[in-house]
Structures are given as C-alpha cells and as structure tokens.
Image (cartoon, rainbow, N blue to C red):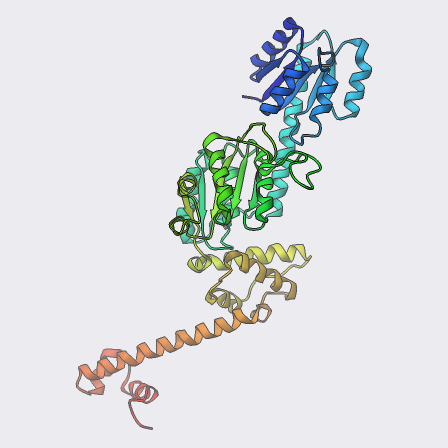
Length: 448
C-alpha cells in the first residue's frame, strides 16, 4: 500500500472516478460526500493526505481544512476547485494547504503526481527527523556496536528479530547501549523509513507521562492550551522505544497493555480512537520477573513485552572490545575538537582494560571525551581519571600477589614431594639449584 487518501466530493460520478484512479495506483481510499462526514472520518482514523472539493454542502472544504488545523496530526490537503473559486484555493494555500487542481481534471496524472509528491515529502521529513535523532545519539557502525565475543550472539539475535514485527524487550545495565541496539533493530526493519521515537519513562513525572505517550486535547488539563501529539502518534509507521519501562506506574501499564492488545488509543481528554501503527521496543535495567513477583509490574504486560528478550552484556564482559571502543571514541572526539591524536598508549589501554566500568560503555565514552580534551599527541594514562589509573595499579598489584602466591605453593609442593631434596625439586620446577635457593629465600622458606 502506497498510502491512505480521503477523497471528499459531493458529485458521485467524479468521486467514484477519483477513487478508481487512486486505488488502481495502489492507494487505500476512503470517501466522504460532505464536510461533516469527512470530519467524522478524520477524527476516527489517520490519513496521509486529503483530496477535497472546495464547494461542499453543509461544511465547505475550506471550513473543513481550517477546523483540522489545530490538530498537530492533521493530514495535508489538496483542493479541487472550479475556475470561479480559484481565489479561495489560493487563500487555502496561504493558510497551509499543499496545492489545488481545477475541475474537471484534464489529466488524471496530475492528481496522482501531486498525491505521490505530498506523501513522499511527509515520508522524507519523518526520515530526516529520524536520521537527525540517530546522529544526535551518536549511532556507531554496526561492527563497533557489536564488538567483542560476548556481543556475537546478540548481533545474530538482532538480525533475526529485526525483520519481524515482534515486540522486543532489551535487558541490561545502564550505559550498555540498549537504545543504540533498539535503533539498529529499527533501521534493519521494514519500518526503517518511519520515525524512531524514544521516551525515557523514568525521566518524566508520572502526571505528565500519559500526555507524553498518548498526547492530549485542548483543555484536557490546566495548561493544555492546544492539542498535542504524543509519542505514539509521532512514531506512526515506525518504532517507539520505551526506555526504563520498569519505572512506568501501574496505572499507565494498564493503558499501555490496552494499546498493545487493541492497537489503538485515545489522547488525554479525547474520545477519538487513534490507530497505534507502531512497533514497540522496551528496555529496562531491572529484573522484571522480580518486579512482577513484588506486584510492581503487571504480569500480563510483562508477557506482552517479553516476546523476544535480548540481554546486552556489560562492558566487564566485553574486555576484548574495550581497546577498539576507546579508539573509536578517541577519534570521534579528537575530530570534533579539531585535533589529530595519534592513538592510545599501551599503559593507558591496559588501565582501561583493568577498570571495572560500573557505567559501562557510556562511562567509557565520557572518559575518552575527557582524555581527548586533555591530550596533546596521544592519549596517555596521565589523561585518564584517577580512579581508573588507581584501580589499574591495584589490579596489577593484586595480579602480582596472586602470581607470587601460586609460585610459593608450587615450590612448597615440589620440596615436600622430594622429601626436602632441593636438587630434585629444582629439576621438577625447571630451574637451577641456585635459582631455587634464591626463591626459597624470597618466599621465606630460609632465613637470611
């Protein structure tokens, strides 16, 4: 289907003619004989474009157009007019209508071209906004996003689920890149030309979250001076990402469950059913099974969202990816700063690998931005935060102590095995008697 079109025309023959040529071109077409019926249809469902006669019984095409303008989701209008009312059509264009065609249509292709161009313009606008959102999020190359052995199975699962319409629940600690994975799923899906709309359920006060999700009508509450689209409407034809879904209050969980089940919703203060043509990807750093057990999360909603669970490993589980991720962030930030840093020195990489990264990839990104600002030619350990360098030293000392203890145990075992015979013990350990003598003193087996 190329798009949905509402044709408003009181002449039955001409209305049927336009419906036929649009349907033959692959559009889904609804029709209305007057402005009042058209307004009812517009309040019940969404259309990509309206093709309307200017002169209609009851409510004119221009009145219909003006009445829909306060709605931020109102579709664009193309008007049909006789030569005697061209001035009204020009007035409509000044008020925001797309264009007009004169009746009778000398060339039906003109209508098809105008409808196609209007829908494509809307699609490009949504795609542009989605692209700008991705750029703002700093979406890295796929190879980098899935760097590390622990991410290999995650990458395969993402490829498997992207082409479907299944709801996805992304699990993982804060800062692991759950939203970036959600964006990749969207870009690999059949909805990639639609918008990707993200909302953090934990960042918005409970009394405002419902309006953010579903929008509101004018006068729905104090301060609602005009109608407003919610995230579900903005994501029409695309994907909505519900981050920190575990923080959503129970009252809204019930409404979200209804949207998933019925694929429709109403704005706050409204009665019009709006179709929820969206794919839902949710994410949380909580254990939702435990939340269900504690009655803080609805069990039925959990099973609706958990169709395809996807766990993102922490950075502690991806130490083999730290060097390549750090290099990517260093290059990105040095470029933004107008620098040409040559890389990261070995000691700095070692320190990054030993650190435990409670903030995961997001923390690594912040660390490398700071390092890029402080560095001159190369990122050195001195440009890293003290807690990373000190943790690295502690880790190195701890490793040396463990190695020293293991060596002491092996020497003790060899000496005991050979009844105190140092020559035989040295042979088993693969060292000279002199070296063994030195080690015995080092580990306190012999007095000085």
